[in-house]
Length: 552
Image (cartoon, rainbow, N blue to C red; front, side, top):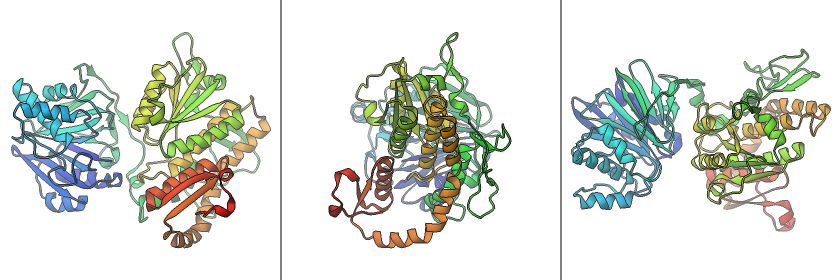
């Protein structure tokens, strides 16, 4: 769960890097560090612990180009020597890295035979020494040496490099680990998550796997493949606001995002579920509780109902034989849903909804298993749906790419606009839940289930359900923001009292049947993720009631 920041421009780099790292703290880490170039010298600061401890020793570092990192230990214990950034023996450049170099031991042995020494236990230092070795033995520029070194790396990486010899550039490259370039006015930002620089620019370049970017403070940017082929990626304007990635008065991001669920669901359905006395009205009406809310208003009691999902109604397929994804979904003999963790649980709920309404067989696969078992797919009969909040989940991306290699139509459900899954699928549906900073998903889960319900309604309408059923279910969907808001507000104090009792539990058993079985799985996951209390899940049918201790 490491985080990367990088900056080159006119501002004080340390201030921007530390601010970016603070916004990435939610990802979890055990140490932090930064490197800033000033006056031809590489200034490096590292600390085990929180970003605030790094800030205490690094906030006075001068310079307008640098990189920063929060590390979650994989190779080697949490320590200053293992913390990033890492440098070669002459400190001519510094590098930060997310991911794992799988062949690092082989590379380390080769470099040791060639006289390299190592001060850390990390795979990242091996990558640094490999770049430096190639740079010096083959008399290459840092850019060319980095490109050549990365072709020898097996595994995943998102890297950012600053150079003592050329303090006007940053080098960034990606393979399986998210990396974004932010574009400002004569300044550039690099980060593993756009929240690190959202207050400075919304214009971004998304790097794809196997791509490298070189950004120069005054001469612009160049993006190319590792093979050296020049690319022209599209500049994308990010959605969202700075307020959305701040706590807004709540103690924790997760609590904030739990309370945001009514608004997130409304935004998820806005412009899609249209309910109005006036035919063609584009606004979903609803009201959250008794409070005035700037986004919500009362829904009409009786209305015309329509449901539009533009992402699956666009044309796909080869020229001369185009069709909509909706047509393909309706004709599918089987729908396969892939996801990990919470997204997999949402897919299990979706399985019940899709099979009930659409009368089509649905299989839900854990993406990490699907990608390795050589699943049998039929391009003319199957549709694969991949679900990921971030749109960057590595195993889900691998499952998507496997399905595409088999010629299967692939649809994505994700929250992050412009993410890799959004770019690589044939079409899909955004959640529009707003940024989810908490690592344990809340509002994204409810929005994923809502999107799957809308999808099932759109597929089944006029085919397997009547107009009356369609209208009834769409109206029920539109009432969800109200109901969830009431549930949260009316039970907030009760939830606190229950938590006071169950915080002393050593084990919890969650039971569920039907639609509630995947919800029980999600509840147990949250109990383990957040409280570190052991939790198990079972169907009601598998347990005798008198033998069960149930934790709600």
